[in-house]
Length: 418
Ligand code: UD1
Image (cartoon, rainbow, N blue to C red; front, top):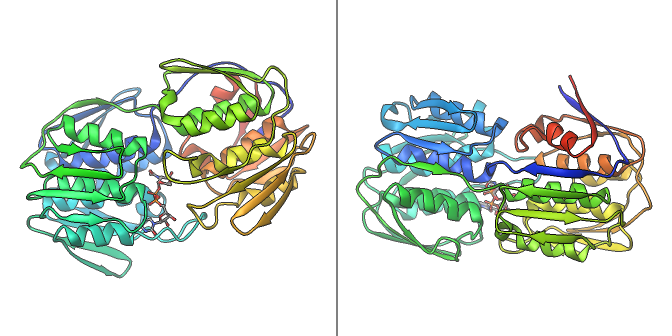
């Protein structure tokens, strides 16, 4: 298994191009199943999760063609097998996103339950309940969700709690339902909006995406489209913290500041100078040590749970005490013991972690436990004195395109070890 070796202590400076968003392209690839014609998706990041989704679509008989370095073509007309096997779903929970489109398009879906994961139980009950409300017959047995519906019917659905992929699954299913669907307490994440834009470009009638109430007027069929995926706001935030934690400066291009306002506010609070343009963000720390920040993760537009580990890393070497409260996932502090091994002063109090910043961390051998925790450890390694080796780096390859190349571009001393 690959490892990353980082020799920390260098201040990072430079310019990076941000990739397309992992959490936008995965639902968009799944939504391609709904079309009657081929679709072309552009700005597709080369990530393990994207390969897994492409693989999953291929196993269903769907035509999947790599059209360019960041372009993928999907021909859903050949779909023959509406089945998502456990062996693929267990490697990527987002595989559940094929459930809604398959059901709407071919009237049946057999999708493995994802099971638990490192950061919490992560049930999919709201996806299942929502599909039942749309008229599907759903049986959950032998570890699989088996859903059937000859024709889904529009419904009024109040989601018990905010779920991103749940909202996306129901929105996709409802595009081909008979009549109108209203989703209340819908997720407002930018990736939900991007999916709605993609579906609308294929002929769907969706309004309100980005607000808590999404309305979907069912249509008979969807046509082909060529579509560009939005920028990855979590990748953007991660590289901003990389500059902040090393006292450096970075210019990120091809991104969209509007997607991560809560993160930018926290960076300013940490003492970073920001120059925000329409499609770029420049951050300058001017060699200063960051000020600790207190934050609570919450659904969009509040602070994203996917940036929690990175800001915790920033707090470990910041001036003062910062409190980090996680409200989305019950077990998303797996990086804490690893940061402590690097010399961080952290106390856990239930869902809150109190971080008392130290002058500097020391490099250590640490273990990546999930995607964003790994990013937090990479950032800590960049700031630490000496050598940090991060094991199980495959987690980071799921969501960060060529991370070591991008960090090297900024002057980091980082190397992948087989
Ligand atoms: C998505 C993102 C992930 C991000 C998360 C929260 C993708 C591919 N992944 O994950 O990066 O960290 O949103 O912003 O977009 N829940 C239920 N029942 C359900 C569904 C969810 O109880 O049926 C709970 C979950 O256990 C969790 C919370 O709701 O505690 C939010 O989860 P959800 O928004 O569904 O996360 P994902 O869509 O899996």
